[in-house]
Image 1 (cartoon, rainbow, N blue to C red):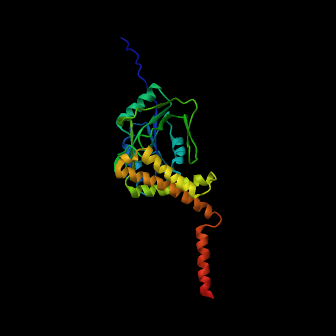
Image 2: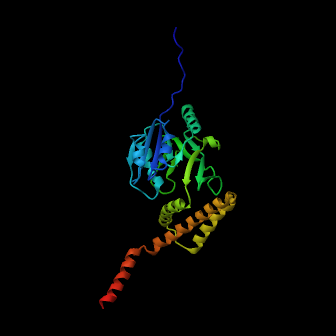
Image 3: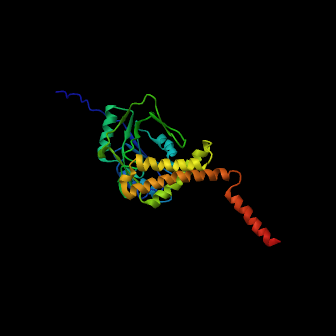
Length: 285
């Protein structure tokens, strides 16, 4: 008696892509939650800790990329290493719930879309933040190869194909990537310093001129958008602190823009050297 043919749908090959730098405290948790993928790609940006050694326990597909201020543009290199039909981008400080992996595999099997927008749960300063401009922030992190292309520009580094079918997962906890964003205010300020370097360069490249008007406008608009429109006030001290620090982010970006233009022709180091030489000259007379 002949057996009946099965109509089992074959799951397309899925690649998990992770970009990391000095993430020894996070990356193991991340990698444990992408083991269901057919391959894991880790691109390391000159880590000085045990990030690479930990990653080797999960994959031999580890690549090195020079450290760049605009961290996200390194994802172009990471995605290019993947061989799967579908690609899942996860940051080293993020985790994928089992329920989400099941949903993503089902979408890939049924050919329901080309790009999937995944919601997030952002943990900042010890708690999940739902306001202040964070919320669930769905992002296109799961997509069919070729339906998103990557550039090396600071802003807009992800470009969607015009014919891509896009769906968004329902905003509920089981569909959310868990993002362990900032541990505390010190961690926030550490990252803020790096990100404002990128932001100031972007403003400079656009030809923006520094002015007190632009600085105060950016600061006030940022705080208003996050604290009042974004209901940051519902987050108590945490919410107020985040809104205030993001307003400072804008202030620091414009201060760094001023520095770039002020010392364009003569760097601060050259100014100080000239002053030092003048002091020494006084001793020679």
